[in-house]
Image (tube, rainbow, N blue to C red; front, side, top):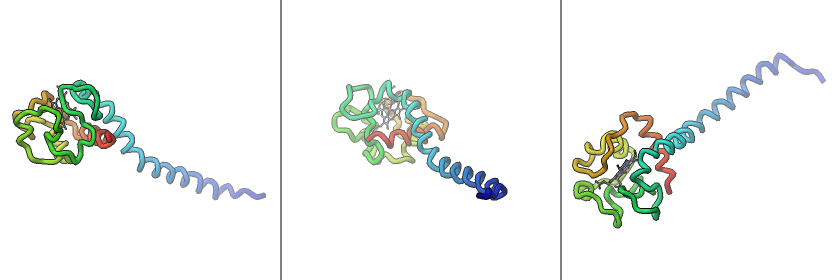
Amino acid sequence: MQINWGRMLWTAPAAWLLAGAAWSQGAPAAASVDMGKRLFMRCAACHEAKAGGPAKMGPHLQDLIGRPAGGLPNYGYSAAMKSKKFVWDEAQLHAWLARPTAVVPGTTMAFMGMPDAAERQALIDYMRTLK
Ligand code: HEC
């Protein structure tokens, strides 16, 4: 058997590049969810990730995206939150997490906000997994 070394030298790096490209396409989402899970510790003092957990100061955040703001029947929202008529989507969550009082003036959520858009995105990616 004759080995074509020249060909091997060309194809091996190409294969690595392809593998690398495939990996980096899948990786950011998983990495972002991971980062979001860690960031969620800032919320977990007041929020249960899933429905049915022990009552905390804030409403649970399961299935949040697509939920009407202030929409859980068994949670006592502020009047300010109850008066809002919107459904949580990514854009609303970015605005809310950046500065809650800018979206719902008078909200009882005592959280200063997260100025870093990448951190907010990671948190949103993680919250999408809370089903
Ligand atoms: C100090 C406690 C506290 C912390 C920390 C906190 N929250 Fe809240 N959150 C609340 C309270 C209380 C409400 C209800 C606000 C109201 O009724 O005005 C709320 C409401 C919300 C809502 C609206 C839910 C709905 O059903 O409409 C979202 C979304 C939310 N919080 C996300 C977060 C996220 C994400 C974090 C972490 C970055 C966080 N909160 C940190 C207390 C907190």
